[in-house]
Amino acid sequence: MFSPRHPFAWWASSRRNARGAFLGAVTLVLALTGTSVVVWTTPSISPVTSAARVVKTITHAEQLRSERDRLAARVAQLTAQLNNRSASLGYTRSQLDAASQSVASLKAQLAQLQGAQGAGAKPAASSAHAFTSTGGRVTAPSKEQLLNPASPYFGMYTEQAPFNFASFDATATEVGARPSMVGYFTGWDQTFRADAVTSAWKRNMLPMMTWESRPINDPNGVVDAPSYSLPNIIAGNFDAYLHQYAKDIVTTGLPMAIRLDHEMNSTWYPWVEDDGHGNSINGNGAGDYVKMWQHVHDIFQAEGANQYVIWVWAPNRVDNLTSSHRALPYLQSLYPGDDDVDWVGMSGYLRPPFTAGQQYTFDETFGATLGQLRAIATKPIILAEVGATETDGHKPTWIANFFSGLNADQNKDIIGFSWFDLAISTYVQGTLATNDWRIDSRPESLAAFSAGLLGTGSRFHPVTVK
Image (cartoon, rainbow, N blue to C red; front, side, top):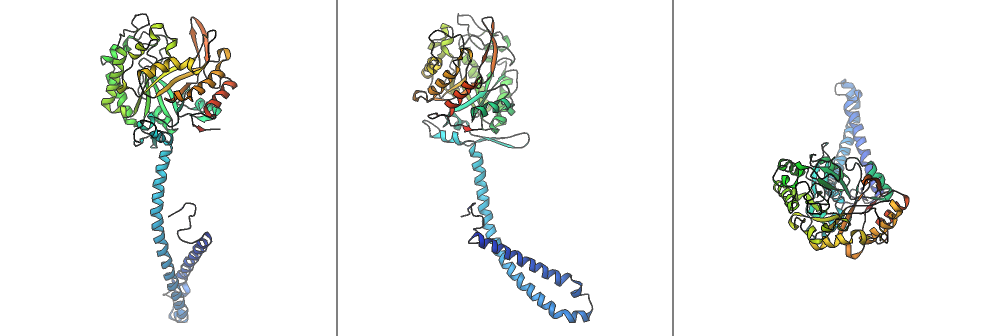
């Protein structure tokens, strides 16, 4: 068998013999060439010279021709042997090249392929692929391979990724690990951006798109967007847009996660059904959210896009909501059903105002909501949007406890998180406040994050960077 560690083994028994045989073959070829030149091109023995000169040199010429014939026979013999060996080698190398290409394409899938060993995992499916505008091939694991990863996802939202990775890469370098997921936001006034998906997969990252059924530049807290009401979506006002969006995903041919109309149990988005006090928001009614979700899902199914889309249903942290929205039956009423959801998730932040005696633990932030998610569905759980403020200085402790919670046995159904790596200024009760959610907001927070992600006992196994 051909071994890439011994490239001369196929035509000589050792590297020294291989070098000697090669030099001998070269010498023979040069001798043959020189003889041919002398015999056929030297004027002194040209067939058009005078008969007297031919008579004088004929004996020498015959000797040269005899030597040439002998050398030619030997070279022909060696050449035949080399050709036979080369043909065999070429076949072996072609097999090796094909295998190498397969290995290269599968490197991007290694962690996900291992995930097929998990409980309830489906057999591994073929990988997805697409071609960029420049003709380069982009490959990715299939949806089935991504649903239950062997190593949990580490994701980030930054200001410009996946369209520009400058700040994304800078933070990853500080952390010392390369994320396996990149999150971004888009609105229903925007067409599908194939470049977002392909640029993510060029870096072996799952793109998770938060898809808001409103214009992308509408501010949070503004709930009146009559054109984008849930009844209008259900009635088909956006069907042409949705069909084209699904077709574009199919054309791109790469998997992605879609977090559609997140935090639907809150009171601050136009796709919310009510304000917690029985009043409609944006003309929406009870049951409309589920009908909207199923309508969108059905359109994607009709276009064949659901083979590429991981549907993420992600409410807000329940214990920070109005009392009527905290109860399990309310959240259950917003769940579209197992057939239309792949992952369940949540948003969870350490954010002010803080209360006396508050605990900065994983369970304090996520426990109540995780309990409801597990009561509603048995789907994998993604912490779809998380972060911690630097206000009051609790962030390093909270981050350490965050990773301790993720590594606990009872939370192994959590398949990852995506960190909101931005500093945002907003008005809270009429006062402008800035929350620095960034991982590197101060050295102590960055150190706690790196230690939690990469330390002993971590379930995360990201590619490390320096």
